[in-house]
Length: 140
Image (cartoon, rainbow, N blue to C red; front, side):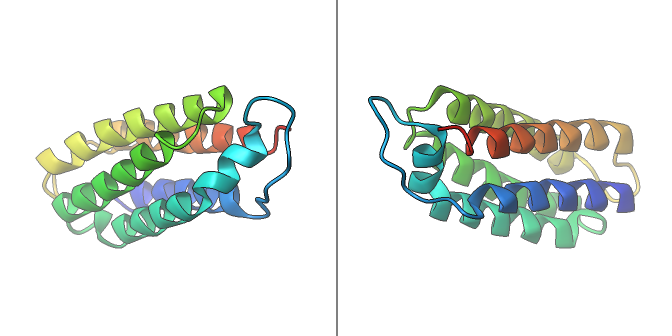
């Protein structure tokens, strides 16, 4: 399960990057990535904290980790409802969907029987979505 914790840590680090340096930049017309991320930065920071919380229990208590990942998913869902930018929304949707699958997997597991390959795959999906979010947040 240490591999799982490392992957979740990487996902949390990617999420933390999404809020670094966000500021409101006036756009022409629709919401750009920077504006979208500025509007959700507090919520995304909260989600990062929830994911970090999940990391502390993933190896020893997957059910507690599942609850913490659910809080991460809930925070991202809340953020999604606040943005209209297509790229930011798509990245949030991908992270939310992978997070939901991770919640389900961890909720069914006990520490000795967690399918580390599945957890690794889902964590990779969350991490990829968060990387997409970082990219979307820098688009003007």
